[in-house]
Image 1 (tube, helix red, strand yellow):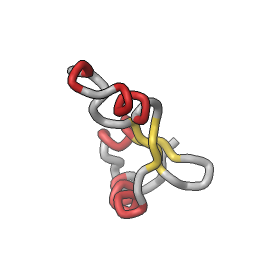
Image 2 (image 1 turned 60 degrees about the vertical axis):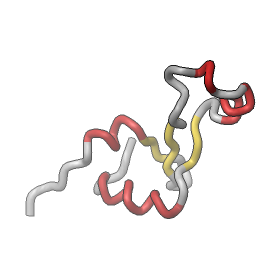
Image 3 (image 1 turned 180 degrees about the vertical axis):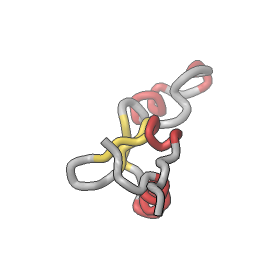
Image 4 (image 1 turned 180 degrees about the horizontal axis):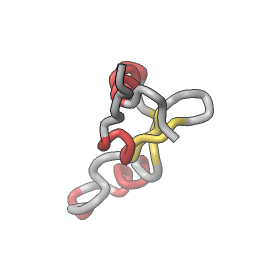
Length: 67
């Protein structure tokens, strides 16, 4: 069988942690930040860990793992 391709969007948007979880950037931080509260901006700083329900789907899109 041929090799499976990784979805190019997954390569760009997710990274694997050492324990096998997926981390991702938080949405809603690029523009129109005047409409967000300071609390929202502070809480969504940095990256978050993907939920378990979504992790299985994203790992299926990256059949050989992520770097």
